[in-house]
Image 1 (cartoon, rainbow, N blue to C red):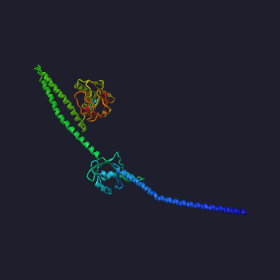
Image 2: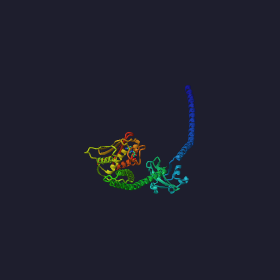
Image 3: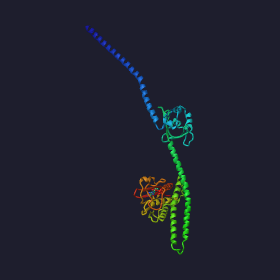
Image 4: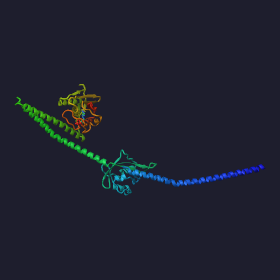
Amino acid sequence: MNGSVHMDQELLKEVKKLRARVARLEQEREQALVHGQQELESLRDTEPLENASRVDERHVALEAVFDTLEDALVVYAPSGDIIRANRAFYRLLKIEQPLEYIQQPMEARSQLVHMCDERGEPMPEESWPVMRVLRGEVLGSGDATDITFVTMDGCQVQADISGAPIRDRAGNITGAVLAFHDVTLRKQQEQRHVEETRRMDEFLSIASHELRTPMTTINGNIQLAKRRVKSLSLPDGGPAGYEDKLTLIQELLSRAERQVRIQNRLVGDLLDVSRIQASRLELNVIDCDLAEITREAVEDQRFAVPNRTILLHDVPADVALPIQADADRISQVVTNFLTNALKYSAADRVVEVQIELQGKFARVSVRDGGPGLSAENQVHLWERFYRVPGIEIQSGSGMGLGLGLYICHTIIALHHGQVGVDSKVGEGSTFWFSLPLA
Ligand code: ADP
């Protein structure tokens, strides 16, 4: 019995202890809950505040970036109303009252600043860039749209516009953003350049025609004078010194004739260039043979400059090089390569001409022992008016306008052929062209 009483007391003690522990734990739990609640409360209070200030900072930074951009940037609502525009936008369109302007609906805004397309026609609403973008179109920088704006003070401003729709997570369009790049100055310069080129071409055309007419008369008179002088020759040689005087006059007339020929060639080049510019260089295409054309051109040059050696490496006699071409124009190309080779090399240098059959092509090349050309100069050789700086005429009484090679290139291109030059500074040059065989 005693033993069991003792047991009971022990048990009671244990139970008491346990109760106290449970109470303590309860209290701790309570405290933890309150603390947690407080934490939560405090979080609820402070987080939005912190977030807001962070967002605010970002907003200010973005706004600054937005306003320092060179290009005009505008954010639109789905209705086309302006949500935000940067300073460059107001500057571009010369808007003095930004707030007033952007508060207006789209139609009212379009009354203040007019939009025109590339031809200067007013643009219908559905073509306005903002409308296109709000319909989902992306106007990339590659295919940027050229728009002319007539600003409130009547000025014309041109801008390249690119832009994209703004979409929510579900992909619905919730607005648009457009960038306007001011190209007014560039367009004005382009316009001026086109106008100058047009006037220059017109001048070339008129000048070359006007120059040619008197030259024909001068040449006719020289021929007439030469014949008259010849007829003055007497069977017995006439008085002393008479024949010498006649010979001198003949020589002077021949010199004048050569000068007229050079001048005629230059004027002819000018005329050709003005025809090329106006796309009016016409070809009289016939069946002909490139080897024959080249042989004749070489013969003509041998006759014109008998003091020079022109070697011809011809194709074998049984090989024909049939082409469909304007024989006079092809002859002009061979002659141009030849006269260049002669005039840009010293009088004692040999000029070599080669005629070749190369697969489906006939090829002519003209090699000289002149100064040679750097790779950089070779790139520009075929351009209109280009003359290599530092390359002087070495022999003959020629002069140049930098048109011959440009004309050659055009003539060969019109015949679906190719031109080229192989050269190194100090090692002479080989100018060549090839034409498809008929
Ligand atoms: P140009 O009437 O001035 O000779 P071209 O168009 O025929 O005009 O030639 C353009 C320029 O290329 C020449 O002014 C000259 O500087 C250079 N050139 C042409 N042919 C040769 C050549 N065979 N050797 C060196 N330079 C040449």
